[in-house]
Image (cartoon, one colour):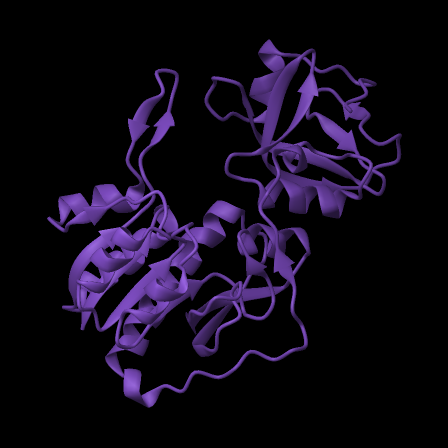
Length: 301
């Protein structure tokens, strides 16, 4: 097929690679404009832009697709379909309707559960046992379109980063399968029951709340890695990248053991197994306390 690809983060790159490997003609890649990054605030192209440029594909970075000129330029591509994966911009009706077969989206949940911006993080936070990917025909509602195909996986104790990488690969494979046999797939309307919304992650949510159970704290740590959920000690943020659950019986936030940094929660406790101070590499809790002691009895809030 003659396609446009629309995506921005690392999650989208495997789908672009899979389309190219399958022999589709990618006429143009749409991605969000470069963003300031690092201390120097230099403009950094998205992972999709870097991959597309390496493959010699035309890259377009409109700030919006509501502009009539941008819509005319998209329509002029004369597409069979557009493939969308975590693009990050709203597609207005003229964009959705321009390709002959419309716009197909790789969505990282089992719709209708977790429509919206952060399905992977919300699935982990909610303690879902299963998640997956769907190939959906896009319409103007928020992830409301009919679904061509889905593939499920068990979450277990994966972090958001690990689960994102797995679902990205699954979504890429499923999209290629759907395009290869497109006329044999039927887009099924989503059921009205079971709809939930995955709201965008607020930075305040990444601060660890030890007044919750150890199970919930563990989910918070996994859901927000990367970049990492954190606690404050002496004015410094310490990120917990991984932990294990242990019994506990102290006031929430109390350090029960200074050598292992065992921290009490409302029910049970956690032992951090991988932590990170600002500007430092990730390390074990034992390595942390050798240069940054957190004594037994300390109350973390």
